[in-house]
Image 1: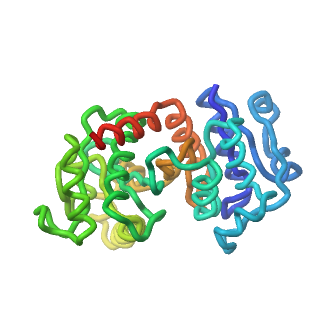
Image 2: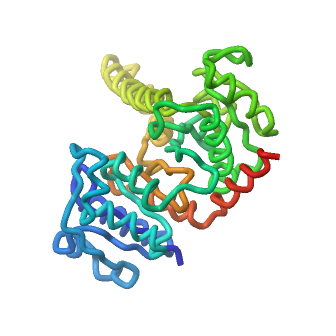
Image 3: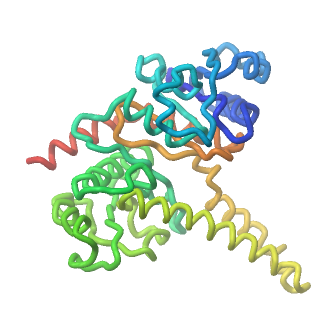
Length: 329
């Protein structure tokens, strides 16, 4: 049975929504969980019926969002440090945290370690599209400055994820650029393009308008561009929702239309809601780490745990390394 270590203290709203999400996940799937945090605060929140599959690890310190990510390595009593150590020591298969994302990334990279051949792990995010399974974008913040080699490795890691976790048998990889032609882009993307052409899954450069149209399954970019893309997407989704709400009440016809379109609005909200995806996997480490949003509710925590379970049950890390070896030939 898969064991997931959960940082129970890291979220913006304290341990309550995290514990609720854990219990909801336990209702739906068979796995074990290790809750890491201040036991006197988290244990009373866990219903008795779950205790058979829940264990606790006391952590007297909590890394706040305002703390520097570099502090995480020094403060070994924090909940995130101890949660990551459980994966390093093979006591847990995966770690889930909705706390300090920089600390989670740094600790997972340095304490769990990178996969052989991977120079830089990447944070991957799922983007909704109208044709079905969401597209995977990486990197979305782990690496601001990248070399062509990094982008190629991101493509390989993303390809493995959509094959093994999303179960897409024939994925398409696109390199985000300022034009479809192979001559477009900066020096880094042009160099990456040449190597990526060796992959039969690479379809070439894509532009910003292709991010949400479902034409590719994996979108490759550096962390600077990817993070702006991610934050812009969140802002646009919120703005569209507000625009719709503000205009619905302006006329009886709009109100009637909204009532008729209620089901459509529900589907739209579900597709753009980060809680549906739970968190972003850190790809390229010798284990599994899922990084959630600080404002995660119980639903987001539950889905982040499901991501961790699906990841841990797959052969993704083996497939990444095999694909890297194939590319060298």
